[in-house]
Image (cartoon, rainbow, N blue to C red; front, side, top):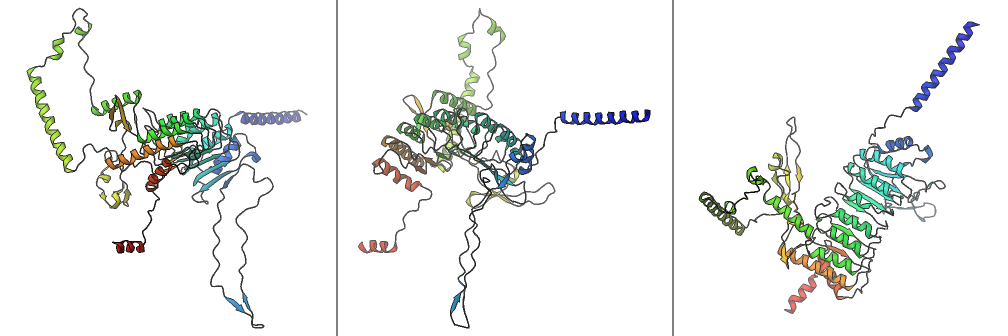
Length: 534
């Protein structure tokens, strides 16, 4: 009897210990998951750990692609003549099954999915593009993306369409996008946000090159923040190339803010403000930025700082006065001591002036001989001044072949590096003093501007025409390989007749500036006729 009791007590103690261990295991926090760079695996595991059930986790699928065009019919199809009746019978190839669509189960099409594109579908770590469409990305899902997206090395495109983003999720997205080193393209279309904090995505630390904020109900409030993100007197976005703000609610006030953002920005090449509410006031402001404009007080102060820093980079701060004179209130410093120079100082000043005059004469001679003085667009050899690059030989089209050796001494294959053109700060550009204001040339980096489907009339068209004419004149006087000015402008469906003089003149100017323009070729008959008439 006693043995049975002991055995029962031992079994009871063992059961209690196992239940306690299980409870302890449940109370312990799970180890943090380290992402592997394989998006499908990381995304599914992080969703499971965040509390989503198996049926609630959006599957990761390959983005459907347009099927290839079917091959043309075989022209060598031969006819067979039957031996019995002698009639010709043509062979008809069997029609393949249609591949232009795929069938799915009921309501399967509307279930949330994450579509991806890969360099190689057999390698899950080669995801390059991610598309999320038509389902809400909440805080939990954005937290999952925050962990797994920075580990995808080849990701360069991220697409959110109608995903119900909020102020919080956009701020969360902006916090980790700079960690995606190769991410260049971002699309946030159909995501209206009351706070309109889209400017966080194109801040100073942003690496994005192409951004689209279409149909987000952006008003003048959001346009002001976006304009400040493009540039101010002290900062500038140095990576954004293309910005699409079409199908929003931007008026003349917002267009003015965007134009102010283009004042000190020389990186943006394409801007779309189509389908907004911009009239002549906003168009005139954009035309002013394209031609020339006066510097504000803040920009003038910043220009003086830059000139001072450039003129004396190693300038030392003046030595403080001696304590005896600085602290003695009874005996102020004499005026003559600060103005009278010794004879030796005068001699030094004369010799230094003679040397400066000689240098200026030599520089003038070099300028007359063809070499430009202070070429602002020369190649940046100091920044990329490695020995291999300095020893590279120039090839055709201004490229260099760079060769070298690895650590073991083996020869490396030669690679071509294009010439690097170093841009300058617009505040350091040449200025013109007009009525006490400093005027600088406008933005000639922008090459594509879309203002279609707005409310611009004749006054706005004339302002844009003056801006384009000024750019063409400046290009002829001061040609610059990096700043060629506006090459394409879209102004369809505005509040003006297509037969207006300003419209026709602007179209004539822009037709020849379009990079895809091909001049009409003259027929040989016309040439011969002209010669015959002479």
